[in-house]
Length: 258
Image 1 (cartoon, rainbow, N blue to C red):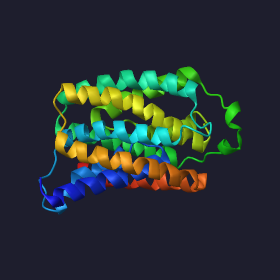
Image 2 (cartoon, rainbow, N blue to C red):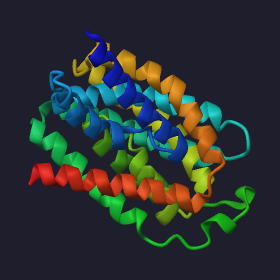
Image 3 (cartoon, rainbow, N blue to C red):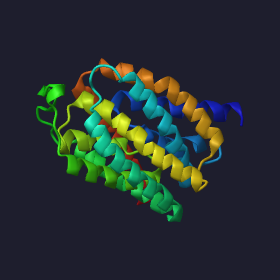
Image 4 (tube, rainbow, N blue to C red):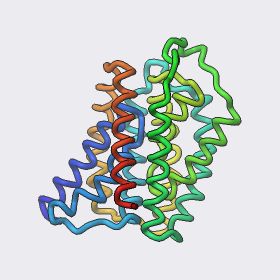
């Protein structure tokens, strides 16, 4: 493991985790394509889609818990939403991560492309007055939240993402949760999801532990810094940042698939 490898993998983990803490996703929306496409540019051996999904899964576990810790104060964590969506997404991610072993490389990338496209479309749907609601008066459709989380869990378990990039638009657009509560709560649900995804990837031998450890160290440093930056930013800017990231990733993934 040479210095170039260490620096490149650390920077991928740092950048992805900083944005993860800032906008409330596990970071795989950024790290998945970066791990696929950046190392070969530096002459580092390319990772397969299965290796990338395994590294992403275990790294998201640490990035999301570091982000949640940073958001633990301020009343932004909706415990009811965490329970309903967390249990459902944990079941889904276990199913998806075990099933991913049977999928070919192109199949894993196709699932990722579909998830990113759906998330991109949802982020550009207008979100009217969701941030006008007091945090202690937030309500949501519990059965719908659980069903959507289960579906997200299966898809995210396949690609090694924890589904945060889909959870955020679902919470904003479908469940009408205020932006800052969405960011904090989605990180908590993402952490629960990543437990199932990581367990499945470990048991099916899909994790490269060297790069994963480098990414974990980067995550623990960067995610709280991102959360601190996000707490000071305007909610419209946060939504815009996430929308652009998801759209860019969806376009790049689909160009490669097609």
